[in-house]
Length: 401
Image 1 (cartoon, rainbow, N blue to C red):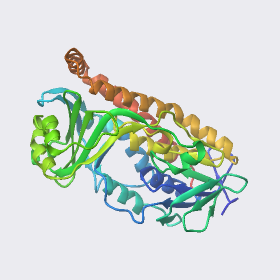
Image 2: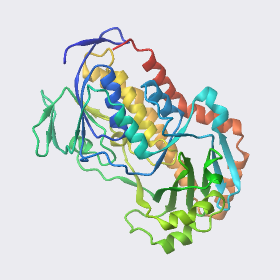
Image 3: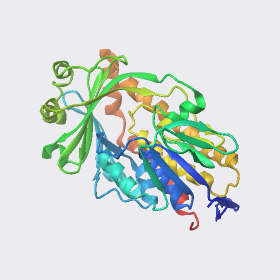
Image 4: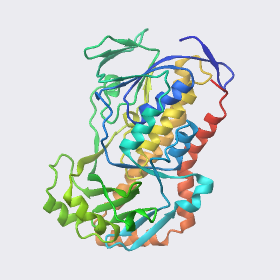
């Protein structure tokens, strides 16, 4: 298919390229759909032998939903509309509210989903022209005149473009840059999806309780469930806490947290340290990076998946009308580097502020949250969503493939 042309927005021909995407997570799936819809010949490699229903919950803000909608994927059957996002003290006293329902007509919807359900919906939406290979482990890249992906126990694959969408510990990034140490964010996280009472699910709102160096987040999901995340200021690499220690830290929270703590204590929690890349990297030549492979960031803004989704669409748009890969890559980096850096830096700052333990700083934090006008919070959220909505608009303006 290489050499057949599409008409791109820059007025020149868009070659239909042979593309290999490494990583079948959220970013890789979105990229595969976008590139497949534009006529590129795509092979998606995923090292897992099957797509399993793993993970916890996720919030997709308006920027991410705009991109997914533009690609023709409807997540609403499996998702739940999020009407508001609150912060509260440890006892449940409200300190701030972002009214997402009021912003929905102008900014767009936010949805909550189980990660497995999001993944399943994106996998089901792969165009029939995309070849999906499960159980494919990348051993090496060869980036000479004929870019090649060497696989464990299988024949090598050649492509014009190789995309690393394989997460925080990306094999593609490692091939390009060597071994890199991830930066600890100074927090550990525990996550779970649990049954939830009506007081949690029927209000349509998420809440994040901020305590003494710890947070307790509650996000309603469809099907009378809630996604719960706990964070604790803690050095990286320490062993998981036992139930008694977790109970001492999180068992005294009030509000929605108190209603869900018994269910959390009864089941296993996913535990990991929060890590991020010290530097962002976008690849070069015939090997590009997106999502966590490019800019793994802390989850404090809930934008890790959102940035990967935006990356995927920006990458596909960058290839439109560009006959030369270097020019397309430059357009991709220009579209994404500053955006990803801004979101990552802001996310890190939010985590640092949330982790304040000194009483005067915590009092100042609570006062600042209470005094911030709802209109200011709404404008900040709209500004955060705007780049994703702009990408969706650019996609909608493309001529037919």
